[in-house]
Length: 613
Image (cartoon, rainbow, N blue to C red; front, side, top):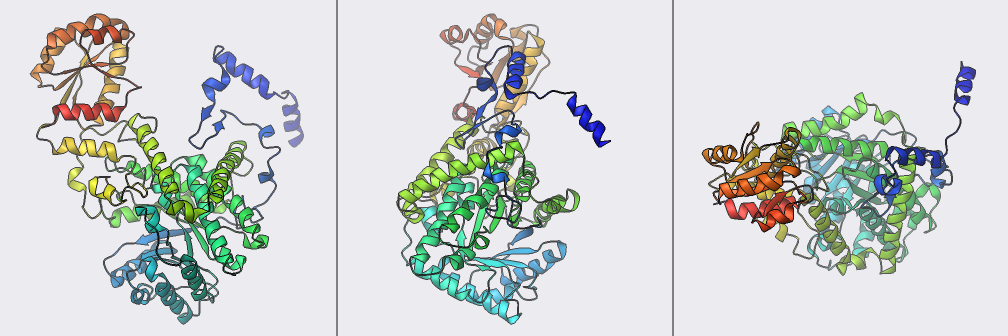
């Protein structure tokens, strides 16, 4: 049988890349291959529409096996990641009860927010510290006391050898969020943290929280480049104090975000392990000590208040990216986090999203399934190159701490966030249900809880102090627009005046419905009219605030002036499309057009200003 298969392959001669490109260009009717099919990523490199074996033949990343330096293919010989749930409760006793409950439902990693070190024993009461990973987050000033309390609990159970967990010691958090310098001696505090953890080898006490950058709108290469610089800052800071580099490296925990760019994120984690291993090795650490400990959390930046169940689709693919990339643990952010405190239902769904990938898709049974993929291997190297450039730039400017304290990193992330918000406004970046295909009848104001609102409204934006990381999610501008519509005494009505060419009027009516639906307006669609007068009369009968003429470009030259004149200012008049006769129509007084090149957000803001009362 095998011989027959080989003979079958012999019947097909090899095809070169040049031949493939020539065939593609022929199908494109002579259009340039590079112009039509090669796209430029936000990460600063081009992506080809196809990759072949020749593209990875010289890549060194394909030489290693899982568990081998430089760990591009993973730090373990298996892919059984830990499933973490962040425990949200009003007291230590309530948090403990909730933790004990979720441990019976498949969770094997817990995250707690600790108000006081005295609460640690209460939080961990009855939890087997030999089998459950524990991760504590607290005020940086209380981190040492919390770590001491955690170590005491571990020793009380005799779990020093088996324990895995972390204390999120992040003295850069306030600087990143608010643009202010940390007043204490960070190196001394970090040294004390390591000393406290000395007898518990599996306790990570130095945090790299690049998920803060991801949730602020950073691009993938930025998160990775700054994360590497952050980790290197810990190594440099503490080895300068005479500490052993291997000991320092073993105490660092990377907490990274996951965006919805599926293959890019998968490649990011592979590149992260590879680059970090090489950085640590330069400090004289043996290869076995160069492993990167990575926890991944699904994005909050792209979560939405409207059509919130779409958040489940986003977080599912994000979780898959991290799982296939071989991270150590994953948190799936509940879908309702943008507007309320997660409830039992949303937390259960978040847990099950990981369990589906394990129990039904068996992703935990395969180590680095993307290894050898021409596309993923190329992406891994490309992202690594861009992140490495950024890392070197930060190092040349004095390192991570210096760039945080002078505000350079925050400024770069704000610029990236602004660019992404603009792309969302122009629909270059799609948020399904928010800036494309909205549920026009959904009302969301009533479900937003003040304690959980992260809608980018004024008081949240002010928390950053203007010099820190931005806090607005990608959807926040559209949500503010739509919430304003809900709060108004009148909900604008948009009437589709469909006339003429059947295919074009239907397509443009659908486009315009999606366009104005993003502001929460009431849409009145129609099958079509014989004359513009019939359409305008029907619109006035319905009390329309906006009349959108939907027809073909050829017909607009006649229909648009006629409709505009007959409407006579009784409602806003809009032409769907960007016809060749647009300048002539503008000269006739027709000002408003909706088309694919529009800034959707700015256009709708203008209508809100004119129409809402």
